[in-house]
Image 1 (tube, helix red, strand yellow):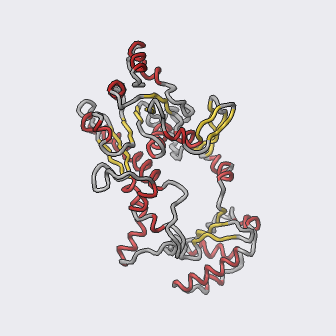
Image 2: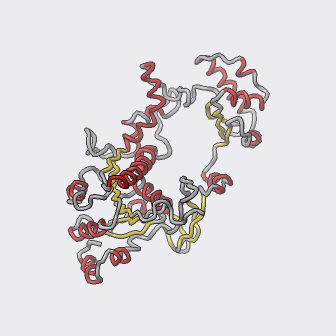
Length: 399
């Protein structure tokens, strides 16, 4: 019978990160059963609380982005720039396994709470720092955001149409793949290592480093040929007629990703045009000619007319869904990837579920995203602070 606590039950995380990469990482840890204490600045909180559009219901408003990133956590306000706040942090670390932060390198060291200053006092502590360019190297002190990291990693040069400029993706590649998921994998590896050695360690996560992994196929071609890839004209970005986005008669779009020849044959058989692959010249001119012919074919039918083929399991042909369609997708709902959680003030809100499907220790959904500082007293009392100490910390603006 599956456990209800999750595989990381008993693991305690002190999360000092903000915005996207760190909070999504700690949410994954929390979904898998870890207890996550979200540490927020008493004045501003996590900046994601103020980012983007608000969900407004029942006289209450909360950032939609914050709601997607912070379930299963408890929030405590601590001003780590004050000595009293740093002492709170040290008291909490006595019973924590992981410290997660997303500041620029050396920021916490300058406050006296960097890894080198903590490791002797907390030898089992796993300290994970997510930064743009890492804790070492020429760029380590550079400010940056997702577009900077993918630009310097060579990814931005690949993204866009042939003959056009580089296009910034509509989603955060470096933040999530380079930051969140790379940090998550490293933290889990460090926890496993600690089981064998009894020792924690420092994890240095660079979002640029993590983004470089996306170059695996393209860089392989470059090393083999010495030729820079042409944006929008690689095998998987528009060169092949069987791996492209096409426009329909009514101005909507579909994607054909029939990379293997058997799937391309299957698709063409469905539309009565197997001659296209039979006559296909396997060079740039041939690919371009076949693509042009397919463009005309796709524009001959409306999106609704193409829809009858979307559920064919052997042609790799799909609609391009809107957000509303994703949230109502029966497949995603059946897998728990789109679900509703109960917020005490907003009611039911749709959120993305955990992508980690474990048969014996499944992800759990225990707590709604917290209000800022909602659990401050609860956590401090549990850490042994007295009412007098807590009041003193408030007066000194440490919490």
